[in-house]
Image 1 (cartoon, helix red, strand yellow):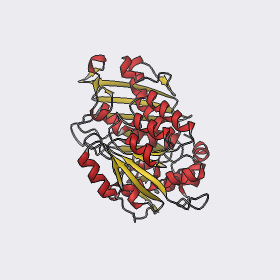
Image 2 (image 1 turned 90 degrees about the vertical axis):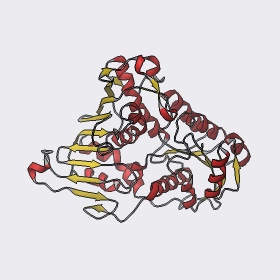
Image 3 (image 1 turned 120 degrees about the horizontal axis):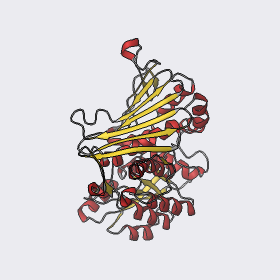
Image 4 (image 1 turned 90 degrees about the horizontal axis):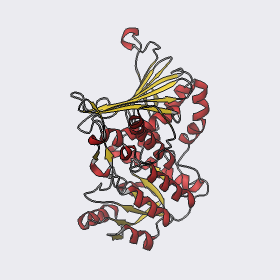
Amino acid sequence: MRRREFIRNTAVGLASLAAGRPGSAGAKESKYRVAVIGRTGQGNYGHGLDVVWNDIDQVEVVAVADQDSKGRAAAAKRLNAPKAYADYHQMLEEERPQIVSVAPRWLDCHHEMVLACAEFGCHVFLEKPMCQNLEQADEMVAALEKRNLKLAIAHQTRYSPSLKHVQQLIADGLLGDILELRGRGKEDRRGGGEDLMVLGTHIMDLMRFFSGNPQWCFAHVRDGLKSVTKNEVRDGAEGIGPLAGDEIHAMYRFGETTMGYFSTQRARHGASKRFGLQVFGTKGILTMTTGALPEIWFVEDPSWQPGHSKARWKQITSAGIDKPETLSDPNQRFGNRLIALDLIQAIEMNTQPKGSMYDGRAALEMILAVYESHRLNTPVELPLKNRRHPLSKL
């Protein structure tokens, strides 16, 4: 991506990242009624999507729903929720919350739960990934759009205060034109299909953050050193849906000059160490992990060989370039707080959250494009014409 494209595409993002906390315009005097949906033993409460509301002054938690009696009682206690329900439909009907955390990590329930929230007019804070397939994602988006409801997805890196310094660095031309984006999953025991779905969603979202929507994807999926066929398709863990492969390589075209690459395999060494994104520009390299306070490093070296050029790596933190980090994010509470506050601001200003339902669907589409390209053995254009799960048609 050329520098002028990046400046044009991120001007709005810079303004929103610089904005303060919600409440200055059109703010409500009363507190928002918040409810939480969890599923103990089947996705639980995600990565803290329940307790985040304990830190938000603008809301009151009115109820929690969990089909497991012990899990429900524990959640009600830690959230100080006055009511607890076994059936989340009953909770939504009786409590009429304005915001709901759809917190379970397992994907098999996301579609149904978000549609129920939309039916009762609730805005949603949703655990990632969005859902199992694009048919579900399209239905979720349509239901929320019908009532002008907002959905924020838990792609925490997009909310990092460090990213405004990265954006400014790129806008100032220090990285040059973006030529390559290289992402990898955690490559632990989940390496391959599960890694692509569960962790790859963060990398796909970051690729889009830097370079916009991809034009096409070309990918190959292997299992046991052989090209995947329908015989290798399996039901994924944690309600993911169809999965395949222990080794995946994907290539994406972005804009005029930028190519993106994502790979994951069950690596013998260094599991989790490579998880993140590298951005290669005509003037240097930027590397980053994920999260609200990711580790981000930058080196001005057009050769991409900093050891040869002796160029010095500079760290980018929430405080700026080459400045020590002053913030902390224990148990992802800081990142979730940023998302929750931004969701409230989006509701009050009638805008989209920084990580919206459209971003969640787009990340999922990049993931499923991998399987669609493998199925057809050709590059596939995005958005995908096939909205069913590609592995169901293999």
